[in-house]
Length: 294
Ligand SMILES: *Cc1c(COP(=O)(O)O)cnc(C)c1O
Image 1 (cartoon, helix red, strand yellow):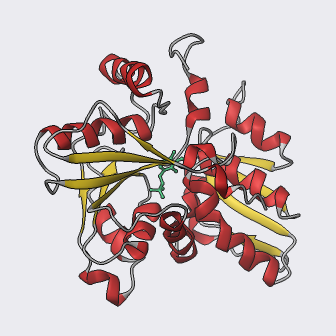
Image 2 (cartoon, rainbow, N blue to C red):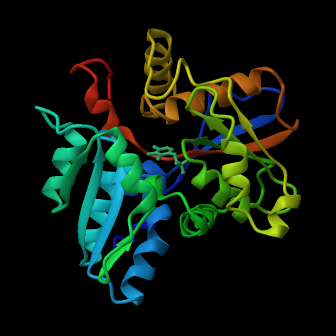
């Protein structure tokens, strides 16, 4: 298992300090070019559990552009386990870069139409030697792994922690790992995904329920993976001003939200905000070449 956690560092934003509020980005994207960001943290305890129980195979689920699929393929191989990915939708004529990577890491891919996929994701009973990781890594073990994100740097002095959320597993982990008094905010990248509130709560312990967290639904930019021109312009300017690369699905929307909330005076003043850069940069390969300067 890769353990180059020392690549992770804090990246203070220099151009967006107002009212004494400092925004610092925790660069999980520097962990690894493929299993970048939060996915390694979400997978670590599933893989540990699989090995502890003598499993030989990992099976999991995802869409054709899923970062989770690629990360699982890679991490399973690193752990010496075989992997199979059940992919939502008919087999495409041309595989996405992510699916090609997953195959290159030795993952066996099986394509299922929407109904077949939903059925499989709900009702699969794993064979004896196979360990199932839920879609998107959603589950207690995923949250427990994500809770260790806050241990990769000195995060105690922050008043706020912000992250992007899809399934909400990372958000639940950050709440679990938060120090007393820290407020955790998730920026949902899905449109009107209000059920995330309960899905996050389901991954918390009794004691975490006293902690303060919220999910914002105001920064999805039209929905999952939608990336209108103004978002791409924002990504370019963030790169020019701060040399911070972001991805079109998650972290660009997160950074946009952080700076907008900062402007609106939503953070404790003076204070410090920790923004979790959860990686995903390889997802930008779906843009036409030359769309971004990084
Ligand atoms: C998967 C992913 C997320 C969302 O994580 P969840 O735990 O599903 O909420 C955020 N950022 C990046 C880059 C991701 O790949």
